[in-house]
Image (tube, rainbow, N blue to C red):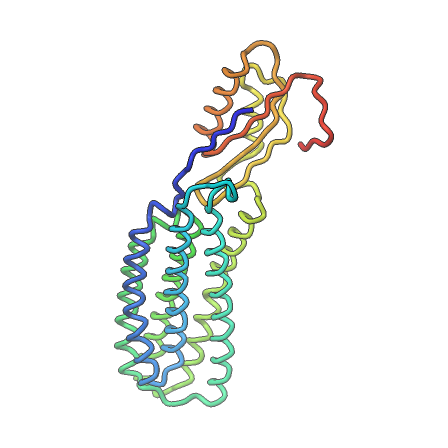
Length: 298
């Protein structure tokens, strides 16, 4: 049996500096937005502040998860702490969904009796928020493709950018027409916009926790490639999963023939898997024909 067991740096860990910059920007603006929301009596601004609060907490959680995930494996956590990043992504998604539902509820309440809103001040605060969120998105955009944890952080900032745009639209409408129904209507629209992306993020993160086959690995192509290596008679019990985004693992039982020495065959199997299929941790059990196991899987 050959086991590749080196500490691999997770995809999110490579981008933690950018995450910290965006966290600092968002935290600073959160304070200003809460004050602005209370002064202007705007639900849209307070909804944006609520999202910003979840952003700050979510970004902080993502950063902490990265730091924990960098800890080395030990006798109790033999795969290390990579999964903390996925747990952070799940928590971020659940919190975002919860906040969106709350904003919809508050929008419904205000729609019954919309209060007067200080539209001009509301526009100024929302404009500053839009700038902060655009800067944050520019910083995290490329990083979001690297891992689910970073994608969760990016979606946090994206949702706040949409909220800031919605707040500004509501502010313009109320400033020019005094139609205060715009505030709860825009707030409800913001809550609905956030749902689809957040739901997809949650599904992806749960798939990792369920050890589903990574979406960037074609398991049928992997099987075919391994079975075509000289010395491989057949292959079974093939499993592929993710420890975290960017760190894929696999195990397989390989029945060998007599054309190649075992160590040489292991080198070929490992090289093919790690080079062509983005798998950083491999485990192969080499068997000879006739070896019987209690239970096998395809």
